[in-house]
Amino acid sequence: MLKVTQKSFATIALASCMALTGCISPVPAYKGNYARPIGSSPVTANPTPYSNALVCLGNYARTNGIRGPKITVGRILDFTGKADAEGGRQITQGGSLMAMSAFGKAGARLVERFDTSVSELELKYANNRLIGDEGTDYRKIMAGQVPGSDFYLVGGITELNYNIRSIGSDNYVGDKRSDKAKGIVNGKLYVMNVGLDLRLVDTRTLEVVDVISYQKQIIGREVGLGYFRFFDNLVVDLGAGERSLEPIQLAVRSVIERAVVEMMSNIYGIPGASVCQGSFGPGGDPMGPIGVTGAYVPRSQATASGADERADPSNWKNVGGTTILGEPLRGRKN
Image (cartoon, rainbow, N blue to C red):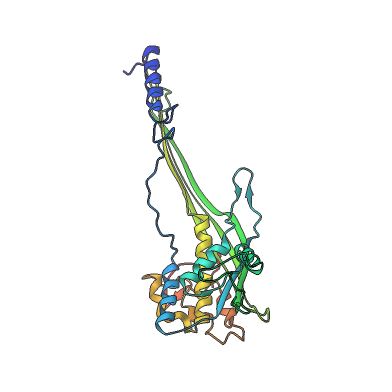
């Protein structure tokens, strides 16, 4: 039998405190710091399942000499209103920045309109002849030196639905005698989703030439294991578990990138983006070939042809006669 006396308990507590003092020093001991920072993970790329398709579109445009229109990104705001009392907003406020990165991957000709504070200040200084460039007394302001945009992207994150569906199981096993071992095993799965609505607008006419509304479901899981038993005067209570949730903000980035894939396919005039279908992996794009949403038409006209097909939640169910997913979006069956 295991026995723990007051003396041995005090020894263990003292040893634990001494071990903790090795992590933090009351005087700067680590090159001027009180503690040595943990973690050595390197910086990595932040792709989504649609990033390769965006890069493919950009490479295709450069290879074939396609020069698309100039695009700028406005404000893509969080309209869900979901906030945590302690942690703040639940959804990223950087949707516009994600869209800029997506257009950049696709090789779009981007012009800045989101944050022009520095440019406006420099223009003000240059107008007062306070800024000088090498070889000149002052920077000259030339008419028409700032290129205009042809289209701009705006919209917002409009859905954040918690716990669309969840399942779980809690199991307790143990002897009826209080001094015998007992165990607990539990597990849970739950699903939530995010959605957004984007529109592409002709800068000159303010005509909305493309509208996209997509959503993505997110899965989370939780598992746990516990053990409890008395050993004479010692109590053993052990527990282990794991909880994980698919990153919500990465889901937002994925939805934005999927929308940009479709818009840039139309802008570049690539019918169905057939040249980039292989970039989605062996299973293809879960939403099906982009061509079913409408081929490219000149930017002076609406590019949202085929909107009925795009809105069909079951449109992506079969790709080339092969079932990609078992059920249509949001549980609807046709």
